[in-house]
Length: 270
Length: 272
Image (cartoon, rainbow over all chains, first blue to last red; front, side, top):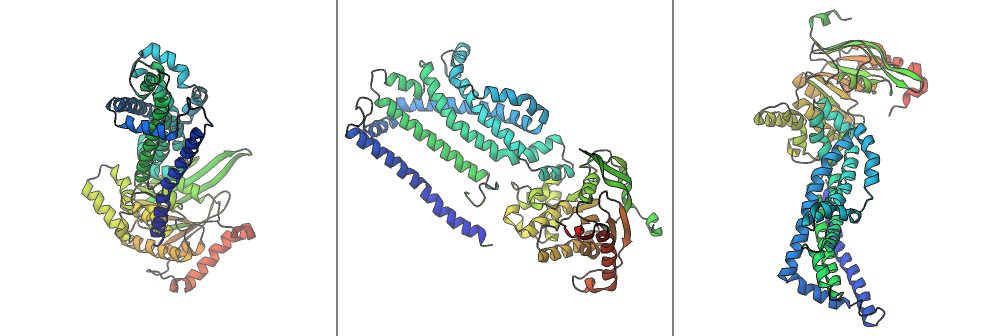
C-alpha cells in the first residue's frame, strides 16, 4: 500500500508551511501598522506603534500579577466550557436522537441562540453578584449553543447502516447511543467545543470588564487603562488573541489525534 | 417439498410472510405470501431481480423491519418484533457497516462484548474468525485502511465470531471487483464448509447463487413471490472454472435466468 506513505510525506510538507504562512500574514499586518503609526497616518495618542505594543506585551508575560489574571480568566472560561459541555452534549444527543424532542425544542433553541451574553449580564449580576460566577454563567450561556447545535448535527449524521448493524447484533436503545451514535458523533461535538472555546474566551474577557471588581484579564484592562493610556488595552488584546490562537491550535491537534479515524482527518495527524 | 427435510431441524421457518408498506398510491406489497424453510447447516441463496424485496426480506428476518403478516421462526422461536437471538447480518455496504473508530479486531469483538462473555473467550473467537478470513495480521489496522474486499472480510469475520445459528448475507459481494468477488465466494464456501453455519445468501447474480448454494430460492419482482425452490447437487469443493462448466450448472443457470429475465424482458439487465 503506497497510498498512506505518500499521503504522509505530502502532509508533512503541508503542515510545516501552514504556521509559517500564518506568521507571514501576522508580520505583514504588523509592518503596515508599524509604518502607518510612524508615518503619522494614525493619531499617536490612539495608536501606539506595533513595536511599542509588542514590547509592552512582553513585559506583561513576565509580570506575576498579570499572569495571575490570565490564570483567573482561563479558569473561568474552562469552568464555563465544562459546564456548557456537560449540559449541551446530553441535550444535543437527546434532541438529535429523538425526533419529537427535536421538533419541540427547535424553535426555542433558534430563538434563544441569538441572545447575546451581554444582554443577559444584568441578570447574571443580579443572581451571582460581581463575582467570577457571573462570568462563568455567561460563558455557559454562550458556549452551550455551538456545542448543542453540533451535537444535534453529529447525531443526525450517524450512519443508518452502522446503527442497523449494531441493532442486528442485539444492541438496545441506550447501547446504540453510547456504542455507535456517540462515538460517531464525537468529531462533530469536538468541533462545537472548539468553536465554543473561541467565543468563550471573548465572553470571559468582556464580562470581566463589566463586572470590574473581579479578577481576570478583562478587569485588569479596565484598571490599567483608567489613566487614559490605551497601550495596556492593545497589549492585553494581543496577548488574549495569542492565547485564543494557542488554545485553538492545541485543541485542533488533539482532535486530529483522537479522531484520526474520521474521514476529515484520515491520513493526517498522529 | 423434499421428504428428507421433515427429519431435519429447520433453523428458519417462514410461513405466509407478507410485508406491505404505505405509499401515496395506497398500500404496496413488497413481499407477498412467502413460505420456505432453511435447515441446519444449509447454504441457501435467494436470487431475484433488483428491487424484488430481497433486502426487505432479510431485514424482516433480522428483526430490523416488522412483517405485516405471517409467521417467522428462527430456531423454533417466533419473531416478536424484537431482533432474534443468534442471527448475524452481513450488509452489502461494508464501509458503512464497519465502525471506523474501532480497529479491525475491536469491530469483530464489539458484538461479543455486550454478551458478558469472558475476555479470553472474546479474544479467542476474534483471533479464530480473523484467521479464518486471513486477516489476523491486520487486526490492529482500521477498516478504512483496508481495501473493499478486505473490509467485507472483516464484516464476515465479525459475523462468524458471533457464532450465529443463522447467517444472513445481503448481496455481500456486489460492491467489489470481479476478481475479489471470486476470491470472496471461495472464501465464504470454505468458511461454510469449516463451520457449517446455516446461511441465507441474497444476491441478484444467478451464477453466484448456483455456485455457492445447496439450494436456490428464486423470487419474482414486485411483489416478491417464490418462483422456484431448487436443490443444487453440484459436487463440493466447487471450482470457479470447472464447476461453472458442468452441465448441471449450465442447466440450472439457464432455468433460473428464464424465470427471472422473462417477465421483465430487457429491464432485468439493469441490476445495480
